[in-house]
Length: 200
Ligand code: GLN
Figure 1: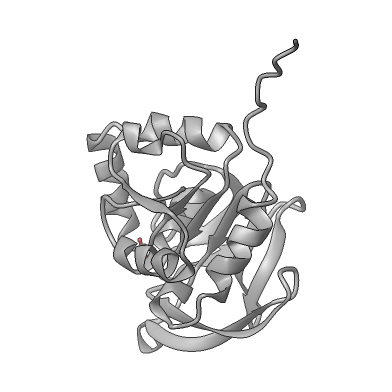
Figure 2: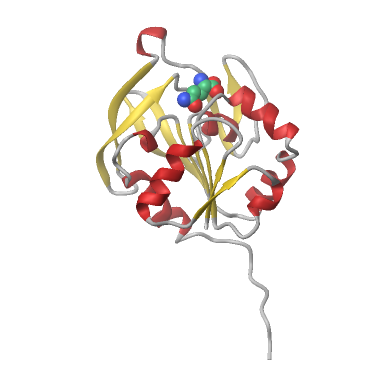
């Protein structure tokens, strides 16, 4: 069962992808909704609003515990902003999971929103469509952070341990390969909480 954080932003598009892929899923609004999930998706939207709502819904601590349990989390755009350790332009607090800086609204007004393609060698994907909507960009990843995708000299996708974050929206296209690859590489191959050994 995969959860999609559904307090703000574009969660419905991620739900549609999971439905198309035949993956059991659930909308997550309250701490109890995190129980039993194998992975979580944090959608795009408006990261400042999302942070305020996380606070209002008492979701920050439960999300920190979920992250600490080692279960995979995928963030797109505003979700990626919440996951990065340092947020600039303007500065903002975050959940601080990935040792990288993220600069908000990094593409000027002329290129505020655009569609292009991305390729991800690590996950063996050639060109797949990606929508950038008032997208941020990653900067200064620590050496342990794996770069998954780039656009010219901008880092657009990163992975660190069980955290994956991308600055664009594959879920707003018809191509579900990115989600499929995340499920294959991060969720199915994931290290999760140690299961208690029962000795007989
Ligand atoms: N610009 C938004 C922010 O800073 C993110 C945009 C998006 O999620 N598409 O939160």
